[in-house]
Length: 553
Picture 1 (cartoon, one colour):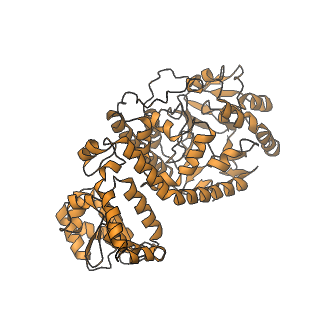
Picture 2 (spheres, rainbow, N blue to C red; picture 1 turned 120 degrees about the horizontal axis):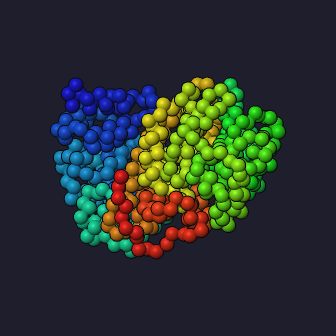
Picture 3 (cartoon, rainbow, N blue to C red; picture 1 turned 30 degrees about the horizontal axis):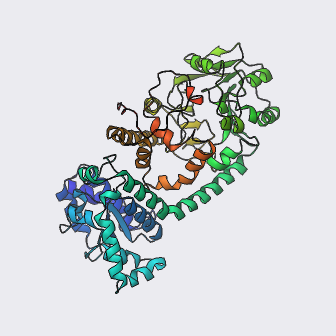
């Protein structure tokens, strides 16, 4: 197939001219052009496809500077207002501009906003803003007034001031991300203007942040109510998920969406929770009366190991942990007081306990034990090859998990995820209650069962972590402070950055900084060779002087 035909096929398959999948022309245009512009097709082929479809009902094409936080913030509002998909937003690059219209130049587009109308008229600067404002009922008055004296003159002056200082307002100071003119950004951008712009971008989006926080909070509350004191029996009773609760631990699923669970699988109890969830676990066990032959912990974090001794006494079953986990638990390190208060300080693991080998026998088969350091140094996952079932523990924790604990090593986490990706997985059970699967024998359960192929979810997390690694490595190479690098990893133009902002900052506040976006940055520059989680006792320096740059693996 020729390049031209392939692009035409892409546009056709994207439903450019019908709405079978509910996607308008603009969505398909943005998806195909953006994807193909960065791939293998030469510009001549793309331009020819553009000419082929020019006569179609094209959207307003908005060309904005993706390295400016104010531009990103305004684009977020534009996408929120544009319910009918009348616009398509594209970041500026030589390839995009040459493919869209030969009249467009990189230098002029970097100076001011450009909009190409469906009639192929090019509007620039404030005139472009006013044109877009007139598209939507809630902003139509602004757009209409913006055409006339004196409003037009004042608006043009204000807009021109921002546009002239574009590089001073860049989120990419120091080249922490790929931009159209990185040299200019490095030369002109300053930290004071960086933070001014980043803060302004936040306040422009604040209503969206608050609304996303309220919406997510309502969803978390709904899932909590549905799982409170509940259990789920799956695979003809072979797998049971017990949802654990406690007065103070209940704040975690309500505020952050992480459920607490104990898994029962073919005679194996996995991660029996913390001391403050013990009454909930006992209530489940007295009701279910399962036959437990072994107790296994995936890693030494408090919400996974706090009831190992108690459950062993209750069930008369031996405890199995990795050698490193056993070392962490004898004795268990003193937790920060806020974690001890909410989750509970686990007791030291009592002897005798047994060490995990390469496999652990169940009542009817065996589970393969897979070393998965990253979330913690001692982490292991369990895999049933017959069922194609992975007990991931906390080795996954969602594709876009952004507030890790202080002992995370993201370089090792990447390697562990690549190891898991090599497995044949049809069901993946997380350590905090979520199940990823497409299998029909796993029934729907809102907020718990996620209808996504497990390997696709792992690939998404790998892609996200690799992108973060590039951002962070580049930031440290340019000697940027940790908090600046953190900001570049969560640009307001990224929807997930502002959608999760409220909950992420709430986690930072409630944990006194032990779980935060800052720790995500630090997780790529761990230098302590001691495997023990001494970060419980000694916090990393919060100095603005960054550590030495990491070596990308």
